[in-house]
Length: 380
Image (cartoon, rainbow, N blue to C red; front, side):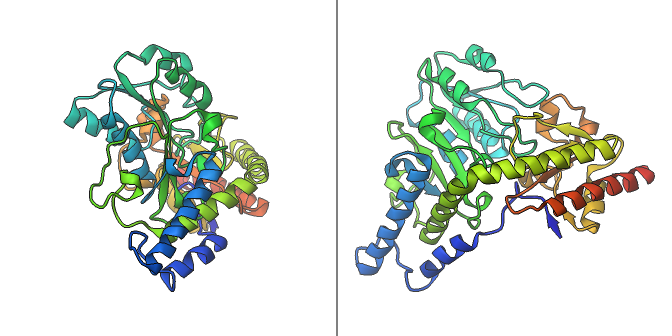
């Protein structure tokens, strides 16, 4: 098997597994308990929080642990918008992850917010000038992802955040896909909130984090024991937090070399497919894209049929977001970028990981050519 679906989830790193294991055994305490076992767990959780803060270049108190990227997005968007809103207007894009779009829709339906969706170009990029035009005195939040989960396009985040700040609007970014590849220094990025998910970084599923700038009033989603400084009630996942901290630290240390090597491998993979599979069309920005992401449409075929052919050949990939798996609707990302619905339904996404080898990429590219040809011959 050649695994090229790292945008869906990544293997758990051995270092993260070794770090979390004791917290399922002898170090099992509840960090809210006021005895020796609980206080040891609280100390461990604090060190994990400090480690994540160092990776993000923020204060430990600005890190809130969650159950993953979806909760992080929900907490940032709903929490900021309901915490001390300037008004009832949010600006986002039509190509965000469902966790962002549905959080905004919830605020529209139940709290009377107006949502402005910024247009994107054919490569999936937001025009900063469009954001400047969309801002209003009652805008309470801008949420634009760092990099797209389907096509890998990277947004001009620093410029977008700076524009929002010209009139004092907080800026949130979903960095779930970017976390393994791009700089996460929140002071450099200029963002006020940033969402992460552990299982995209080599930690296990069920743990995430969100950076929330200290000055922001936050309305919590979960109420109860007041954990996480009142932002997220519920007994903390100490083992998961430890694993996330380790995975994030190692990712930061390895990021530059891994991104360079994987980008070169991705470019070779893309070039081979475009040369040897005549119907293939690359989606997303040709250069401003995540190092591991190569997504295509294959007009005249069926994306699902191509996926099945590839899996029979030992290539594991996807048609887009794992969170939308099983949907018969065309990708909302591709249609927003201008692709016709029938073409959008032929999409296949390949996401290489830091451990993907040149031999695997070569074999996968050859399998793509064979799979598309096989599907086309059947008139699929």
